[in-house]
Each structure stands twice: as C-alpha cells, then as structure tokens.
Amino acid sequence: MSARWRENDRDIRQLSPMKLEQLDAVMAIETASHVRPWTRGNFTDALASGYLADVLFDAHDSLVGYCVAAAGAGEMHLLNLSVAPAHRQRGHASFMMRELISRSRAKRLEQLWLEVRVSNQGARRLYRELGFDEVGLRPAYYPAPAGKAKARGEDAVLMRMALEGMV
Ligand SMILES: CC(C)(COP(=O)(O)OP(=O)(O)OC[C@H]1O[C@@H](n2cnc3c(N)ncnc32)[C@H](O)[C@@H]1OP(=O)(O)O)[C@@H](O)C(=O)NCCC(=O)NCCS
Image (tube, rainbow, N blue to C red):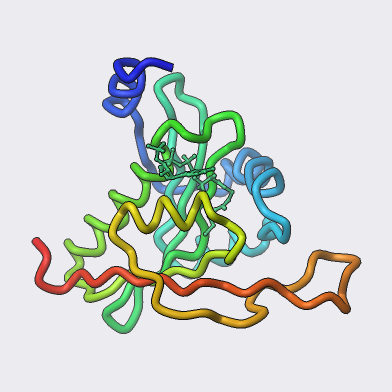
C-alpha cells in the first residue's frame, strides 16, 4: 500500500458518535478482536452512561473501528479500542487515539489512562509511540479465556499520558 494512498485515506476518515443501530457491525469487530469480547450489553451500558463512544468510517464509508472511553475525576480512561482485522495497520487506531487525546485536552483533563495485555505488543507499541508511559502492572487483570476458568488471567500493563500543561 502506497504512502500516498495512506495519506489520502487519512484525510477522509470520519469519526462519529456510536449509535445503537450500529451495534451489529460493532459486535462483529469486537468478537473478531478480543479473547474476552465485550457483550452487546456492555456497549448499550456504555452508551446509556454517556461514555465517549465513537465509530470510525473509512474512505469507503465502511465502519472499520471504534473507541470507548470514560471521563471522570479529571481523567480520561480508555475502555475499548478496536479495528476490524481487515483494516488494521492503516493508521486507524492511531487516528482515533489522537482524537481522544485532543478531546481530553480540550476538556482540560489531566491524564489519560489505559490497560493493555502484556502480550499485546502491537497495541503497546501504538500507545508508546503516541507518548504513553508504561507505569505499572495489574496482575491477572484479564480473566482466563472461557472454559479455562482455573487458568491464571493475564497481567495488564497500566499506561498513562500526562495532559496537563499541554495545549
Ligand atoms: C491494536 C489495534 C487497535 C491497532 O489498530 P491499527 O489501526 O492496526 O493500528 P495503527 O495502524 O494505527 O498502528 C499505529 C502504530 O501502532 C503500532 N502497531 C499497531 N499494530 C501493530 C502490530 N500488530 N504490530 C506491531 N506494531 C503495531 C505500529 O507502531 C503502528 O505504526 P506503523 O503502522 O507506522 O508501524 C488493532 O490491532 C486491534 O483492534 N487489535 C485487537 C484489539 C486490541 O488489541 N485493542 C487494544 C486493546 S488495549
């Protein structure tokens, strides 16, 4: 894929608030993306709670990803970031995260937090490149996959971006 195509694609990407009628498309991406996917109820609860929830459309008007985050106590907490497998490595996640960072700054929030699986090297790299620091470990944060209830869960790396003082 050429850099030029990537640049054009970036120009016409569009983020918009997630709607209930988009949850079929969202769930298809969610189940293809996570060992322990969110349920439809998790998404409806997030929408009902007024969390920041956006879907991303690409240049061809396909719903290719989404991001869910919650603001509170002066902080933003990323809860879900997913891109459809066929649309990865085109800068979509990076675009959504840059939007989230800039909106968090606009709200004068001081920090942006997230957890990521220790094994998820791609996502950890994405977040490090955006300026997040790995500041801690949450032991067995992610439950073992269904059917392996006795197995130990996976640790989460806690990542933080300081927003204070940034314009
Ligand atoms: C992690 C995820 C959201 C990345 O989405 P994406 O749109 O492919 O990411 P981007 O194209 O914006 O990647 C930006 C940068 O992140 C890093 N990165 C992303 N995916 C990577 C991978 N699989 N391997 C290595 N680096 C990766 C790279 O540095 C990349 O920059 P580059 O393309 O110039 O090398 C996507 O793979 C996904 O949905 N995975 C399953 C769900 C998940 O893990 N979500 C995050 C949970 S915290």
